Image (cartoon, rainbow, N blue to C red):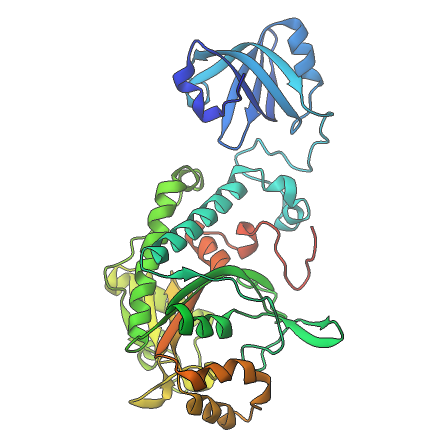
Length: 428
């Protein structure tokens, strides 16, 4: 008999079926026992009246893997309106050791560190698994939106010979006796692949050895990277980003609607044109000094409130960041060379995306490195491609975990990360 999932029981009323999953909850009443079985799709209720089967159920522990065969009967009070009766119950392994928190309760009562210490079981709770389902749907939407626009998915090295971000902290390692680093981003490689496919994207891990210990930073996270050629300037990149976000959120609604409902969240609408302000104007709106070189978290929150109040938008572009705060490959604004053709996208008052137009002339790269006092040699393999004809291009990167955290309202990005890696955590 083929196994069916909990969500497939409703049309099978009157049939004998086989389900399998974990013991989610047992309710042992005087005349009847209820066994709640959890599978990947949801919950199924099993009604036990036979004394022998009841004894077997009493011997089970929560989270034990079991197989149940029974008859599907309609019951409006049961999960999905059906339940299994006259069951046989077979453990699929030894009795499970119960985790240090109750997974059947609506909310996990354990502290976040305890959840992370016991992540393999904590992730079984709907509040944690729903966030991961939303994450998976978001990535699927990201890929679909770009595939539909002629982008090619690429896969680039995660071990590199030099840092990407002009001196930012990197994780060093020994590569057969030579120094190497974990990649901070696929930036160099995705630019080079614009010279091959014109439009490329990648979904992959990036590594930042910055000793942040905040609710919004991880040392390893998933980056959704995009790069496209033959752009007029950064505004072409911003237009693609807008469409990608709309595609991601539409796919979340379509594929992860149950997870969205479980978490009780409202998916934001992406405006046909996301409001945008120049960095200098953003400082004024946020009440920051005019000589501030970057936006602090408090400034971002103020800008998010302004975007919601003035434009009814959860999203806001801030463009024209000072060149001094952007990587050396960033293209300056021709009209204001001290400012860049770079941008950030704020989502509900938090930086979600960084992007912009890149330099594409070899001579400009040499000048940019010289101006910053950086040697050319570490970047030789990267820079060489620009001697052979590269189009004007630009791109962006979305931090997946930060996107999901902001979307779900999680207070800490670790709540939506399966096995986070940060300043303190290397296990499990």
